[in-house]
Amino acid sequence: MRRFFPLFLALAFLVALPAAPGVSPAVQTRPGGSDQNDPTFGILSEMKGFDRNGDGTPEIEDLIIRDSPPVKKLLAESKFVLILVESRILKDTPGLAYTHSGNDLLARLQRLQNDLAAEGFGSHLVETKVYAGSKHQDGVTVLALRHLLRAFRDKYPKFQGVIFAGSFPEPMIVRRWVWRKMGDGVTVIGGTPIAKDAEFLRIVPEIVSERSDIVLADLTGHWNEIYQRGPKALTSIEAVPSAEMGSDWPKEGKRFTSTRFNQKTLTFEDFFFIDDADFEDVPAKAKLDIRVSPKMRHPELTEPNKTAVNPVARPEIFVSRINARHIAVNPSPTFRGVGGRSFLNEKGQPQTVQSAKELDLGISAFWVRDAVLERRLLIDYFDRNHAFRTGEKPIRPYDAAVIAYPKEQFTASNGADWIRAQRPGTKILMANDANLVDYVGALKGHGAIYFLYAHSDPWGISFGEEYGGRSKLEDAVGGKPWRWNLARQQTQGGAPVYVYEPSLANQGGKADLYIHRTIYENGLLSGRSRLYIHNGCNANSPWNAESVPYNDNIYGSFQDAEGVLFYLAGVSIITRAKAFNDKPEGFITGLTAADGHVGRGWLTYFEIEYKNATSAANSAACKQCYNWSLLGDWTIKPRI
Image (cartoon, rainbow, N blue to C red):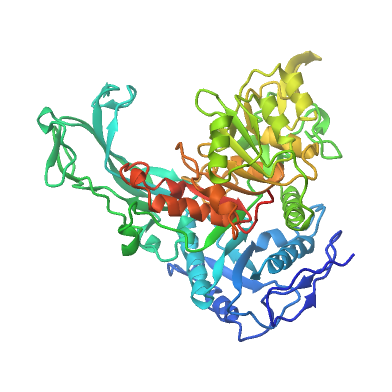
């Protein structure tokens, strides 16, 4: 059946989109094509082969319009979205048995343009090839992409934002600030742990966000000026104040002295350096004697943002990423058991393997990226995205779910109160003090928004480990686990044999790719689609971001938040790349407003922080909003 969407872009030509397998053709009302009056063509022509740092290696190698079929004109008054799709994911690698072709994926992206048009957005779909070599210079390419986005902002007054489809470089932020910090009984200064009731001066550079798209969203900030390719050594100081300092420190015009201190250098590379610490950076010997100012420098900010109640950068456009590369992994085909038996059978399902030697089945050695699986996950994502936008609004017993653990720190009722304070009357399913089986059970529900309220790390989320053992967990996820464990060691013909079987015996309470992949492959969430709020620490941090470029095989492997998005029926997720305890305040308010969408929820958090005097008074927390970014599609509207 042919479906026609409402037309919001007046005066645009109407043309039909070729059908993807299982996808009805759709009327298209969007920019693109051959009209040279469209300023996009000039922008792309100028940016092809863009070499920002003049080293002879372009950061943006190629840009190709992939709108199909084209229309003749982009109306300047239309809200405009740019979709940048990585060239690699549209190409079919010879010899790989893809379940979907590159053209199938392209058709899904073009269908997304039609869905956006039905919601009042014009768009361009641009196949993009950026630097993917061995140099660790992701930030250089980020700044080149920022230059591209600024060009669109300058030409299109209603440019709303960008969706990155595929793998693109990501900005990492290092920050240093002057902090009067309370001791923890663990930190060692001058050879002795600092007492819990003692305060000390801390001026330590640290990675505050391995993935922070405020760098791309704030198009007027001074991010160009603060980028450091490095490696760069930065001074780090921890110091107990001398007795004569009293309690009045740090203070403008008053020198800080200490005879018990740590002064060293820490080295970072490929980062945006927010150096908020105004201090005298000089080497000390027996005594530290330096000028320290309590005022922050805010080197990334424009002058207007520096005068805010809480000076922070603010998004001027929306940015989100749809990238399955880090979590589209399978057992390496080089891992074989006795008789050449692989860990996946002919149907691609886990099977028991016997090996003549003990094997390392860890993330780095055993799991490798799989382009066929990556394509499948992207196709599934865009089909789910389309169904979420255009299907009938489902009748649900509740609007949202909160899954919390442990109760001593995070309660489902607290999470529910946070949601209802922004949207009164929201019906919420609460899973309190959830163990891993409880978590899986709650995921099988039908809420439109899922709030994951627990500790996490770059690989997964921590829930309770007491759930009745392996059989209970494997029953919950539907069996056929996507994890192998050494079940036993035996002897055959006098030689040792190691037996590895699909098993969740050692899973504990961790909700990670082993669990999420199993849920996906068993179809437990088929037909569902939802938004996620992932409040766990470092859930959005790509593993090894500090040491390797974005295209390295160990960058971001088993990524936590991306696993949730692709394997747990997600369409969008707001998530944090920092070990910090904060919620994205106002996200539900912006999301559910009359003109709300996921991007609007993200922006609302920044707007609240911009006016937050409490945050301003806390030098460690004042820029906590930088830690939050969006995965999936920022244009998605809630269906509650």
